Length: 173
Image 1 (cartoon, helix red, strand yellow):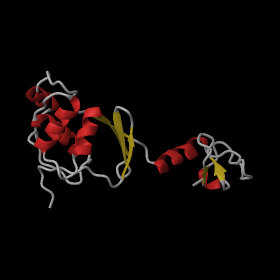
Image 2 (cartoon, helix red, strand yellow):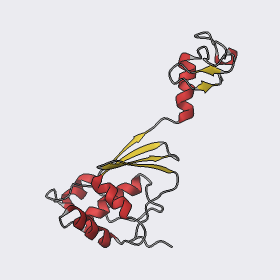
Image 3 (cartoon, one colour):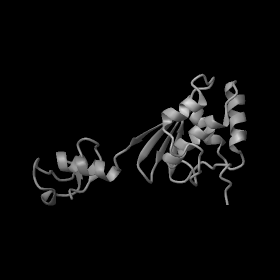
Image 4 (cartoon, one colour):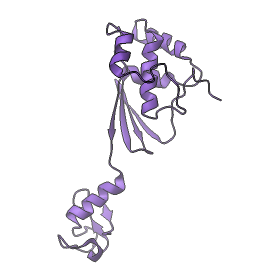
């Protein structure tokens, strides 16, 4: 069993893209994209199961050149919980507190930028193609496919068709 004081970042079902000052994480299970600022990304990477919250606080302080409290790390972990970015939910000390109350507790005079996770729902690929097919139906295929007249019911569209917006082959269903 994982010690709740040693959080573990989730890796399965995620597409991770590291950028110079942030990490982009796409959750294939929920179709949500998360942007972790530099501080949140550092804390998330330190959540490897071997580091306690106290250890992570020290690592953050060493990396960014300023002492940070354990509450600072707990704020990030609370966000990771909400966004399902940990293998197992970790009970944080901020359950039931608003973000404003937590920031007040940590203090606005923190030397290190607050960890921020910005999230965005991304349309499912099937829904995106389905929208394209319903709105624009199909166009002549560049590979010899059939034409689907604009406004015709999808069930009457010949196959294969190409979505004009994306150029992807699709079935008119």
